[in-house]
Image (tube, rainbow, N blue to C red; front, side, top):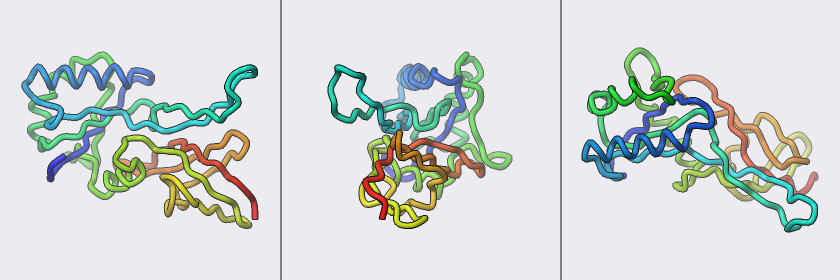
Length: 186
């Protein structure tokens, strides 16, 4: 998207994320806004699933919402214009609980937080799996989205191949789960 652009974040009923994304896209289209003007999305995260007995023996990764209950909208609309266009939609939607904001009036995700999320999502809007090893008490990521982001990791489950990470969003900490394979312990 062309500069400047903003990310606005809706808190929605859990499990309604995809429905809200479609509703926002339809509403924007009805207002004459294209996907270049308003692009709703739900960031995804890869999650490891073990194949059931008798099925493909390979590791399986599926995508699920990175932040269950959150829908993002990327747009060039300023906060004032965004509220003008979407105010009635937000108010009448059965699925949207509220529009998140930081402070009293700032409804756009702060730039430093948006940039951190964009780095993790690598432009694909999906937190892809990472690979690493443990050396003593330290985790070292060698491949994937978490390279250089080891400080975000709060918990690792080697058996189920995931790491819990904490990300700042609107001045508070939000937890997310990332696929992480620890290939060895040194």
